[in-house]
Image (cartoon, rainbow, N blue to C red; front, side, top):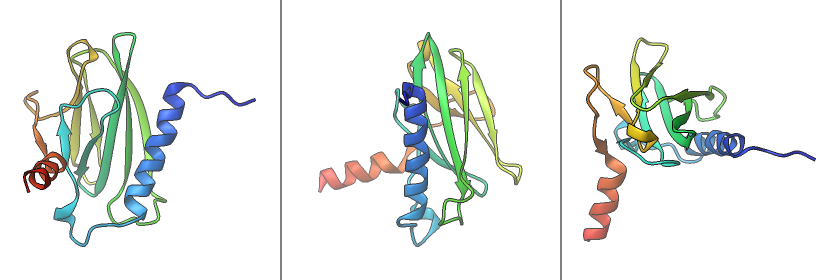
Length: 142
């Protein structure tokens, strides 16, 4: 009998979501890609691009840490064959750098008490932004 831990199950779900997002309906223009930089809570995605890579990241809190999953693929890869993932555990207020092959970097930071995950700039400041939320708000406003 095969048993999966919650982290393993979520990593399979994240990998599947990454493939589904890139393979089903790529936008006509790169500007149309959704962006969500955080801060986000547990199991909520950060969605961005870094250089030539699509990035989807989320975390699950555990033992006071952020257990982060990061999925990446080439923006031009409709098949999902370039997809890769990395997992890392951070203490609160720690950050990790995710590099693309073309010298672009995104930094993810675990929040106080592992309550949030966010993208930070080179000075350690949280970057805010979400075309996903803006689109939701605009459609709800009518």
